[in-house]
Image (cartoon, rainbow, N blue to C red):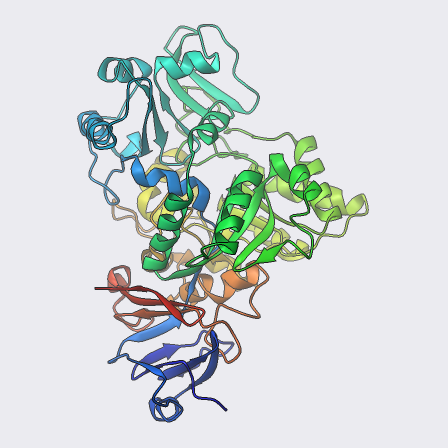
Length: 540
């Protein structure tokens, strides 16, 4: 046996294997894990050509797998104005928001007629109510096209220039599955747009380049993520990631979901064929449906109405269905017929019902599901739907950081019973499911340790625990970000745990997340990220 290329010794190795074995050291040969054991055992394997990393008591965990994120959508945001409220950012008032936009305009030297873009806008948590309209943006930025993206990503505010470009003028009709908010008592748009009135617009604005994509992927590496899902990619965006994979290379692996509207084109171009589906760390994993909106934006599709009405003041409001049942039936059936894994954005229980109905309709028509259909988010859901997940072979990806950032808003919108059941990971695990937990970046921060902490505490910024009975243990939280996330993406055989033969995707942490005080989990730092045996991030 040849000496390993790399050994990490003198620490705690949380293998996250089937029995949660804890070791002290790990060896890497040819980009794969070649031994796991005690420090003495692993140190004895090294020779003069072996790189030796002294852990000095630090903790090694498997590389994090972010099971739902947006690489291609997130990359362009790096150069635009961040408008987040605490605890993510510092914007508290409309004046703060406008100041951030003015700073970004100057920083980017955006020319007249160019686009000024802000993201992370969350009026519900702003001290002054955060009301921004087209008129405010017109007054502040008369020479530019302006758009600010709601923190959910499912809506935003634009100025009059952009409204006119889209044909959103006095008396225009709402598009199906979308809302154009009007000035009270009129048919005149006020600049606020939701879902299908917003999505086509924002996708057209988010242009990127190779430098921005690589910078985005290095940001994931900085947080210990070694595999990330690109959760709603156009064929053009799939091509861009593949070109990087086959050219300069990717610092972390990317698993792309083709946006449902481009499924036919992707199939026609052979992206799901055996000779094209995977190359150099890039995999075309499946198709992404978007069935509803966001609970914090009041567009998640729910069976029981919102307590606070709709985003445009609507009464008896149940949110929005982005696709009709017939449309989702057709997409799911087409995916299953081609053996393509289905991932569907489902925040509300009505959207989950729609996905389940499409799945059953496809089976009834003779299609064979390829397995592990993933309802993404699974937030404002009913517990009986977890039983249906078990029966149909679904595996949910949940989103517990909502409890922290948006929990107080969910309490207002849904009341205690529904808000306390947001992303019910405990109930899912107890039913034998393997729920994952995701960042949905750029909707919330990438940080997997913060995400793990929210699954254990479920505490809002206002100090409310959203469903103590849905808390999970730190060890379970770690699995949801490693081996279970790999399982959800059908790659558990080569990543997600520290076991011999698997990819040497490793993260060195400055503390043990299953051993520290619970509230210290969120503050654990990433010291080093190793991808296929190569260090892709090291803290200075």
